[in-house]
Image (tube, rainbow, N blue to C red; front, side, top):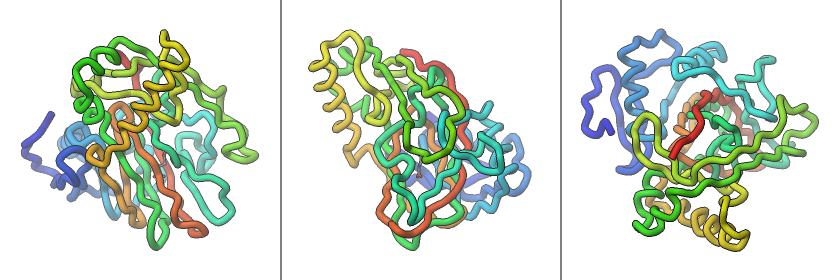
Length: 275
Ligand code: SIN
């Protein structure tokens, strides 16, 4: 979708032929015209995860940009900034015992209506490391054999979250979600099919025996790790990464202890996934 599109308001520099692009000519601290917004959205849909550098934005500007894409999502359990649960804190320092997003996942896929996208702005980054990897679930689906796709196409899987103990003393915002979703979902904008199971939240494939489900999920969790499906983002202070949770999984690498990596994620509500 949008391959070969001419952009008039932004410049789009792909990172790989499969996934990821850096956008130039965008300053989210200034008003964004509808035309420029439409191009950002088109580039996002085409490249699945997009990156912006040198974005010196306030929390209000971050929220306002997120709201251009839809209503904002509230994480079930994560601490937030400025007393606003729409501003999820992503923070790791020398006191941390874990880092958010340390395994491959799609954000809060255990919600009945999982968030469509996440917009992460990091202000403080380690001198080296702290990269985030993104993998295309379109590519993961497209590279499966025809019989495997036919098998997966009709199946649903159970997604469950349990954030107990993950955020110290912070009181959760709501009950930990659980939901059943198609194993293969159709993207509501692009119409492409994407694999929608992830090691972070997917517990079992429904209708299969426990052993069958385990074997199939283990295979799929390995399959998505193919480097050919991925791009890797090296953060700088005030970078933004925004990923489409409907077709992308990501993992954040905690290789910089005891340094600090810190910022805010604004997350956009999505729809119920469909086959
Ligand atoms: C997350 O899963 O939202 C964290 C991603 C990151 O810190 O790079």
